[in-house]
Length: 69
Image (tube, rainbow, N blue to C red; front, side, top):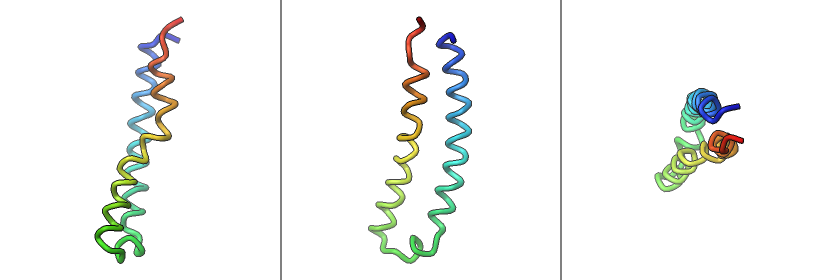
């Protein structure tokens, strides 16, 4: 598969994943334990959620950037 096609497929998958991830993250952020936690805990939670989406997408990004044979 050409690199250009892989990048297109990867971009579509990434946008879909980030949309779903954002909805899940917003639902988790509205959970009662997080809302009742201290500001420090909330900040750590939000920072972790803000970075956590990268980990599942790393294999996809590596696949997209693989050179053409």
